[in-house]
Length: 547
Ligand code: ADP
Image (cartoon, rainbow, N blue to C red; front, side, top):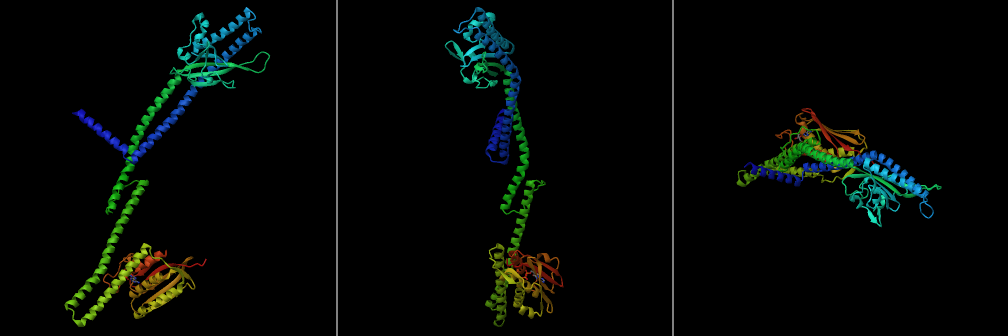
């Protein structure tokens, strides 16, 4: 049943079309926008074309009509001159000859109108200044006397119906049809001459000119009425309708072509957007591995690249977070396992009473270590979340370095390490949160002490780095750090000596805290180290300026 299946196919096509129209999408927005733009541009250019074509055609034709109007105007003046010359004061004809003279001028005017009609299809009106029609060709029904000779034509009822008949005279209905204002210029009308030719489909070009008559012996012209000659212009009507047809057709074709082009182009745009959308969903579900392939270098390509980088960063962050949790759990579980073992041993009596104090001492140390770890973690979390308010105060650099180092003198002395100063920032004040920066120095000096053998040297240096910074260096002659390990030592829980040979108490958080504190001061830290020779930690502090 091919017919039925074809019908259902059509139905589903219609459904899809309706869905497309209703569904908000980039393609639909583009389509609507482009269709409106195409229709508007067609309308505007069509309208302009329409006006220009009409103007061109009327301009060409109107030159001929103007000449005919002038001609009729002259004939009218001649007729009127004969009229006033051959009338006496009481309004009677002075002689039969005078009347014949006037009559011949009158008929010449009529014949000329008839000639224009026969040759050019012109309809002519000679109108008095009150709008009453003095003469016309084709003739009006009240001009029967003129029709007798040579079978003159009468005006169609389509036109006479649009005139006013009053007391044996025909009048123009609209003042615009016979009133030209004070101008003696031609008044050009293209259309139905204010309703006179509204029964016809053709457009009419009508030119009206007032009759300016100068009485003998006078200088000023008197307005005696108007002359209007109209000519049907089917070519205007034809041109207008073909312009409309042309624009409707070309708009239709343009819209179809635009839609096809848009479907192709928007696919290129919407496909990556759809991919981005599905990738976002994947990322929001925790799958950071989702990536989009894109070779394009345009804005969308850049967006996709940024998106891929973001997913990668999120993935790294996820790995870091998992590592962090694993490290914290590990750091806490190890001491807790041993604490639990020792307590079980004491409770079970496996550990004899005389050894119990020893194990309780170990338990105390482990608890202290866990305490330090938890405090370090809390401090770092606060620093990184930006919740720590720094109490920035000016402080003398040299005093800060000497006083802090002195606090650590006992452990330095205990390891028989020499502490040296090389201070070149006399009287220079730095603007810092004193407690935090003390913490930085303590961590660095403690590390230097931890990793330096007896007899080694720790040197604390200060120098001006640039206009607004001093540079502090904590240098030791200790074990040093291998180049492979160097990039990681500022990371949380990173310990070079995993077996904790040199340092049993370290949490691997010290340098991470140092970095966070300096970052909160907008300062940086770097390290230089040679394995077996020693390390140098260099950081900056902001100089305090009084102004
Ligand atoms: P910890 O609390 O374990 O010392 P840190 O973050 O302070 O952790 O240091 C990380 C690692 O960097 C240490 O485990 C150590 O291996 C290495 N390190 C830090 N300072 C020095 C130093 N002055 N000399 C040699 N190694 C150091």
